[in-house]
Image 1 (tube, rainbow, N blue to C red):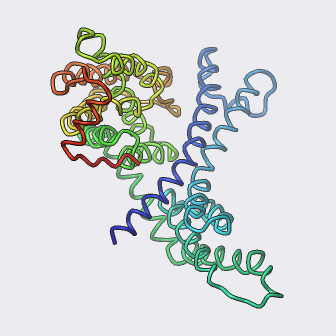
Image 2 (image 1 turned 60 degrees about the vertical axis):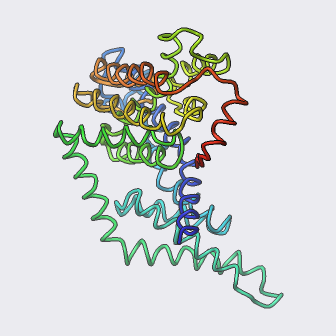
Image 3 (image 1 turned 45 degrees about the vertical axis):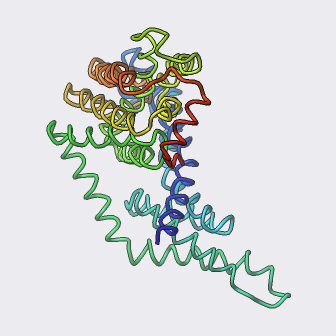
Length: 366
């Protein structure tokens, strides 16, 4: 069972890794034209759908971004299927992802479609036919069985339950976000998850929650995760300014300065060199820092009416810019002040590896 769960996690992470550029690219091409329009006093580009000129071009570019965002379910279903069943599963996975969007089954429906297509394609490897018919297996039999299975399972058997579950979850999260107390709980959970494994499965799960809801037009969770992602590496960067250079080895000091860039563009992996110095001590620091940042932004009323950008550029897409900045500052300041007090960053790489080996710590950073 443990191996099966590990395999499923790998398939999911593979799908997410292919999906991330689609989300980021789509969001940026949606957001940037809207920001340019807002700079000229135009808040709604759709008014220029049938017009001509500069704002019509902005509208057209903006729509390309929405097409990209609309492909997310297709991409993740296709590449989850690909991870399981290789190329023969890809087509059915794409179809299943688009089907999930069509029947409003969302991300969950896309995942089910990807797994169905992948495992059916894998099963098709066992089909044995005569030599004269071998070419028909990949051209006819595999597409028929994989796509047919997706149509049957996602399109008929689970269509109603998956659609109901997706709609209910989105409505529930919307209600939570609209209530600041419940919204703070969501922020607390997502921020802490971002701070756990710094780019690993738990971190990516929180990021996925934010971005799947982002696709449904609920931007709050994406803002929460964006803040947490920024404040953790920026916290370690800030520590190198708060404390004297003697608190850090040259290697760690430079890693901290590099985290100014990593944190600014929302790359939590920048904090990994610090985390590995003392994982057991710094895990709660990272989790508290991420949660504190997300909760601070939420309680101060951060929101966005357009798809939020990640990292510090997210400031320009946030409606309440002060809340977004305050959230990043609160989480980063906590980590910057506390991390050097609980861990010794003035050690060489050799000493670091020795210490970790003696503690017999096993970290899964997939």
